[in-house]
Length: 231
Ligand code: ADE
Image 1 (cartoon, protein in one colour):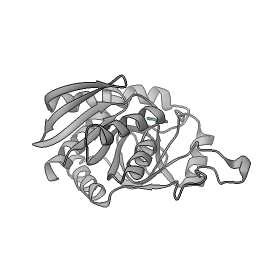
Image 2 (spheres, rainbow, N blue to C red):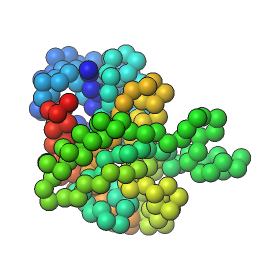
Image 3 (tube, rainbow, N blue to C red):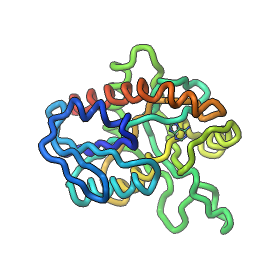
């Protein structure tokens, strides 16, 4: 098994990079792939950049060129579920692209026309391992499993936040997870998304993000390390 670990930003992969044993670095499509091991498991760690296209390109390279057999996406997200606070964690049951809009043709928002699904289900074993890891690692913070909704939008207003809850029951929102889930789905590769909350996706999202991103990334990192140990 080779596990691909994707973070969108430096903050999200740096802590894992420091802990891993890097055997080789490959640059493909302007992304640096760190090939090696962590917790005695073969991994490829990469920063994909922000947004769905970067995430999909990255996941496809991991699967198609670097032979990964499972993908974990780690990082931060905006909290939507009312029980969530900053630094709490959501582990994906499934993911969808909330900004996929073909409503002009009568499709519901979020639905990808002419595909067999628009909702991509996370791997159950990775989800269970993630929940167990998060419960052990985070003693002071809540851990929920639920849907993560992604779009090329930093959600920072309450109207959109409320919509994402009402339309999709999205527990948290970010900008890559569903693109990674989609790419894994079409390739038949298991995935899970693990996100610590850096903000509440409302008017204060921007300042909260800057304040909490580092600590939230630490939470995600500890969970990923524990999952690798248990795999
Ligand atoms: N990542 C972290 N916070 C986010 C937010 N509020 N919207 C989108 N992506 C995020």
